[in-house]
Structure formats: C-alpha cells, structure tokens
Length: 87
Image (cartoon, rainbow, N blue to C red):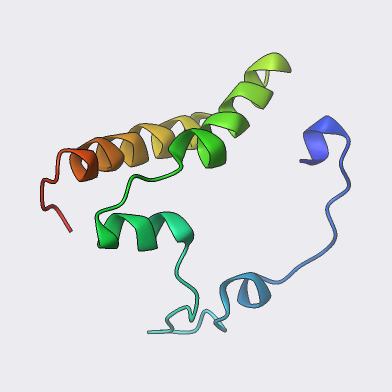
C-alpha cells in the first residue's frame, strides 16, 4: 500500500493474526476464504487477490508472491466449485 501512497501504520503480526507467533502458535482467526473453502463455497479470489494484482499492474509494480498466491487460491477455488475434496 505504501507503493501507491497510502501510509501504513506500524503493526505487529501478532495483533493482525491474533497470535504471538511463538513456536506452535495458532491464530485465533480464520480468513474468510479459508472458511469458504472448508464449507465448499466459492471463494472471493478476484475481489480479494485479483484487485491487488490489477492495482499493481496499473502501477507497473512486480508482485511475484501475490501472483503465486493468486494462482494457488484460484486453483483451490476451481476445485471447490467442482466439489473436489482437497482439504
């Protein structure tokens, strides 16, 4: 977000994930796309990850990690839509 002029406040990963991140720690939060996948519902891939890709491309920013995440999540979403059990 800083690349497009939106200031990012300082944060701790523990505050965002609901975990201290220590050994064996688990987050208390399940992302909505994970909840959708586990329930066999279509995931909001375009709304949540596709928009990030589009915004980066409009600014000529390289985002290889987001591109990889998009490909993996889009594949999971396609499997969920076909009702293939992979989780």
